[in-house]
Image (cartoon, rainbow, N blue to C red):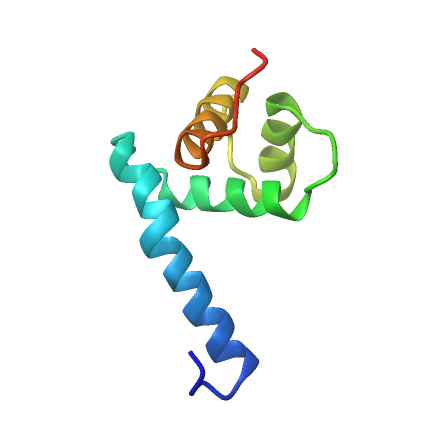
Length: 94
């Protein structure tokens, strides 16, 4: 990484590292198939909204309006729970 000169190269490297370790770990541990893109988008949305209150219904509406992806609030809640199982700190209030 230190030999990479541009910001874009470093950013691409870090995104690839995240996908190969964290995201792949979630997908493999929970045997999720065909939703890698959705899970990746969800993690980005959650990370960009740190400090903001949200819930699975609001996130489902965001997916529908901004990404044109229909995903049920229960599925989003399940995916958030999967993320917490890797970091060990999420407890779903539902």
